Image (cartoon, rainbow, N blue to C red; front, side, top):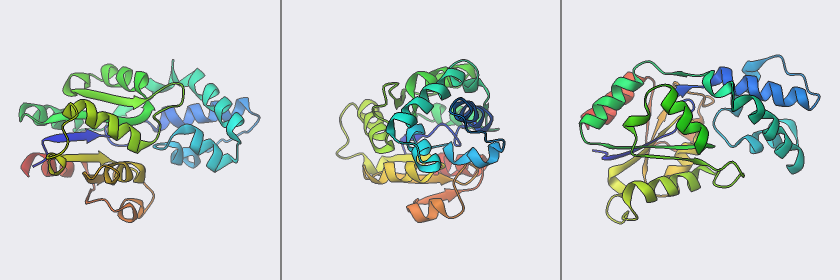
Length: 220
């Protein structure tokens, strides 16, 4: 049984496609690049933004930093609410909380935005700990986010609790973050992983639906 459950946000608890891809479009447009196909921008969901701008558009560090600034111009006021909670998530979180599980969010998105999103959709009270990246670009790697979430959730006592902890996420970064700290991982295939991505990353278990995830987390 997993007593401590860390959840990714984007593609795991909520579907952020409209907001994220629209804000990437906005940033690219400000830099003179027109990208009309938002489906093409789905790979931006999950990893740190600056990494994605460098990988997918060949930006150097300075240009990637500027792209993130343009992205946040729109995201901080509009994009973060162009989002929706996956059906069944609130009910699952409520059941887990009532069962005494300790829940946390571990996201590469800036923590200030994570908190706003969770509050906006009414699921903030289910989480004891919320950890994201910093607006200055620090703590963006998933292993760093997971490390801080575990530190807060376990109050520094992790020696005998690794078997009680699981990270739930939709991308390889979530699985890799769990592995970096010796915890179990569950990949959710309803998110934005490419075909075979979760398997290749070595997820301990993969579920296809929120209902299947709920069964795994509540019946073990």
